[in-house]
Image (cartoon, rainbow, N blue to C red; front, side):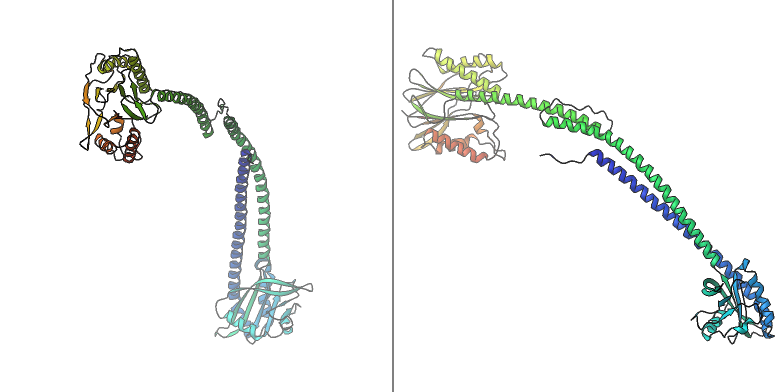
Length: 561
């Protein structure tokens, strides 16, 4: 199955470009925001300064004109009042006064003055049809053309004039060249009070905020221009950054992916079975370390495969050795040899074992039973046991008919000693049952004592046939003695290796000779193969899943005559 992949270089390039774009975009947004905030701060500062200045000028002017206006109003001198406020309006180029007027306490407008460009202006707010207005005629008695200020506005003037003069931003309509225009004004209203404290009327000065609005708009327009310039510059910078980012990303990704692709190709060839391939990546980063480890891994895999191949060949040879060893042992099942019927069992702890057993029918009708146990297990022990079996067969076949068991062990001992050179030794037990089934002889070379089970007077009794001697291969000139005992038909003989009695269960307890004897005695009524099966079954129940650490050998023989 082929996997659909996305090139690593494409991923690295796309990631780098996206990151550069994100950084430039964030920087651009922050820069534009800073420009906008700077414009707002400038406009707010300008509005605050200009408004505060107009408020201070308006407050001082209304206070300055209040007292003279009171005297003129007391004398009903309209010309004087007009002359008082007209200069304030004419100086509008410096203080931005658009119009000024004086309203009597009863709501009548006495005098009003306006900028020369203004033909008429609205004094109060409200419905256009009913609001009072001043029409500029240049006549000092122009107030005669105006109506009375509505009570609503008069109350507002009184409230505004009840404290210190305070500016109020309002919108008023004016007519210039027959066109009505809405003006933003800062209007100051102050009470006109005579020396006795009597309020005679109100003085209102209206300062234009149009220049201030124009300056604010100019600053904002400049801010927009600056923002446009910043955007263009950042766009250019972003394009350059993206181009450089693409170039750097492509170069970097090619440098990285070239090594990665080399590793990938090498891994693919190894996956196809070419274990000779190696990578030639020269880098001082993690990829270089990975390439080095890849080569080490490839070397190790090649070595492991070679070791596996050699191990397979060795296992094959060991299987052949095991097969050969099995041919050296009697076939499983019940067998007859002279005066006995017998059965045996052998199981190696590994592929090959160091135990062996056999039986021989001698020329005079006697039966010879032998069990050997080479120290350890595995191939070396199996080779020694094979040499012992071969030597045993040779001795039996070439010796005089009257040879003895001690002679057999002495000659076999020399063979083992010369073969193993004391690197390995062997315990060996030989039992000879006379052809009449009434006597047996035992010679022991350091092996476990055989167990004789005899039924006398209806009671089964198991006893060890004690015979001692050096292990084969310990000393070249060892001598051995024979032990004889009387037997009869029905008696049973058990030969075994120490792998049986020393087999430990998961709790660490040995199976032991005592339990072996008890189980052996309990099954005397069975045939030798049945007894072997019973002994192995009891051993299995005892050890459970505990691993086998030594070779197991059992031989059971029954006297049949």
